[in-house]
Image (cartoon, rainbow, N blue to C red; front, side):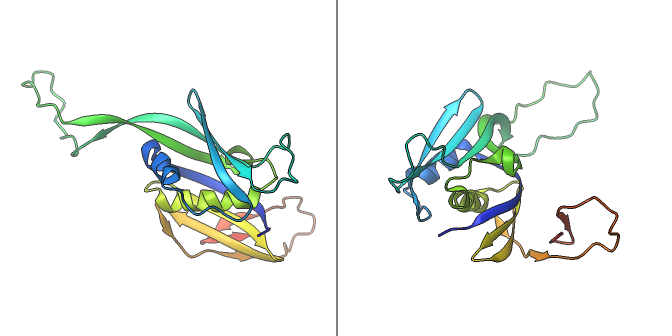
Length: 186
């Protein structure tokens, strides 16, 4: 499977434990990817493609997904909102725990790096987006000379389309693609 990733923007967040469980369950990986090597350096998580093609040299950097790791306090129930007086009785503590989240946030160059197996690692990122309960993933890809729009919001695939339009102002140097009305406009 070959393809290209032209635009990508991600605000995905999911518990690190859920991400680790996903890869521990031996998920179906895209053609060309034998495995995904997960490395953590301080608060950075790197998911690197391991190629099944021996023609890709061991010194060729394969595509990788990069996420930051942050801790968030998760409450079992919503904390009560109080009037804010400083003479209140002692409040009952609400049960909570610190949860580490993997945050795939940014554009293509920030989240999806290197070109060898880049499209395949985008497919891996799409699977992660479908697991995520928070954030969005929007992208424009090309497979077999056809453009495809992708939009996943809070783990649910949503309609998206690509519309290529010519700008009436020929003097405008503003080029590129923008997101408007659930469509990427070029």
